[in-house]
Length: 144
Image (cartoon, rainbow, N blue to C red):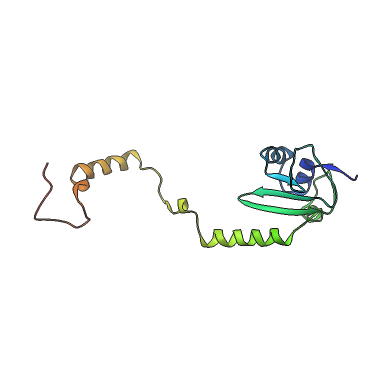
């Protein structure tokens, strides 16, 4: 076997759990072979360069072997070799995620519950929304 469909190779090399997932990613334009956009039926051969975009990071691998069966992970890792640039990019992305967290992750609570919404409305009706600062003014209570 000197050539193999890219979707089958990606599945056998354990980049995707199923061939359907591999096909979907290829159709979305996230996989390229030798710098050109690929289609699921495009054939890959030993020596080709395959680029995949997953989770915001582009992985570039060199095809070292072909297999149309999905074997254990150590065998699958022998089918490709990741380029040094790709390894450096993944390391940089990992450090960036570790040091600069996603701002949305800081939100501990989502939308208020019905009860919480009523409490907020009641606090605003009681004059909570009329103040310019958080200080308590006993001399000038809000007028309603």
